[in-house]
Length: 264
Image (tube, rainbow, N blue to C red; front, side, top):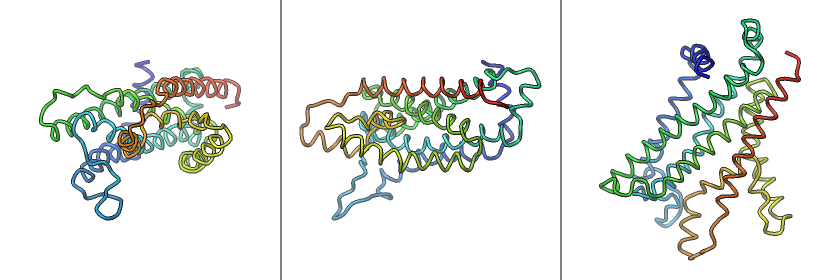
C-alpha cells in the first residue's frame, strides 16, 4: 500500500489543481464557520438566523460536520480529475506497462480515497476542537458528540468513493464532474422525494447512494427543531451507518469488475 501511495504522491505533488482544491477545502471550512459565528453569513428574516451560530461543545460537531459535508465535494472533484486524467493522458496504460497490474492501479486510487478521507476527517476534528475551545473556554466536553466526526469520515469515503466510481465509469473529467454534481444536487433529491412519497413513510429514499451518509449529518436547524418540538423518536442512525458502509463496498466491487473486464 505504501509503495502505491508513494507513486500517487509523485504524480500529485507538482500538480497545481491538486494543491488548489486542497487549499480551498483547508481555507473554506474554518473561514465559512468563522463567518457564521460572527454573523457575517446568515439567512432568515426579522433577525432570525437559520444558521446555528452555537459553536461550543458539543454543538460544534453538528455544525462543522454539516458544513464539512458540503466542502467535501471539492475533494470529490479532485478524485474525479485525478482518475480521469489517467485515461485522458493514457498514463493508466503506462502504469501497466511499467509493471502494475490493473488491480494495483485501482487499489492505488482506492488507497488515495481512504487517505484523503482520513486527512479531511482529522482536519475537521482539529477545526472543530479549536472552535469548540474558543467558544466553550475549555476542553472538558471535547469528546461529547464526536460521533459526528466518525459520521463525517463515513460521508467522506462515501462521496469520494462515488466520485471514483463516476470517473472510472465515464473516464472524462468534465462529463464526470457534471454528472456527479447533477446527481448530488438534483437527481438524488428528486429520487429521494419520489421514493419517500411512494414508500409510505418508510423513507426508502434516505438510503440512496451518498444520501445515507448525508442523513448522518443533517442541517443543524433540523436538529434544533426536533429538540424544540421535543421529538423523542431517534433517527435510525445505525441503519444509515450500515447503508453508508454497504454503498462503499458496492462502489469497490463495481469499479473492480469494470476495470478487470474493460479493454484498456
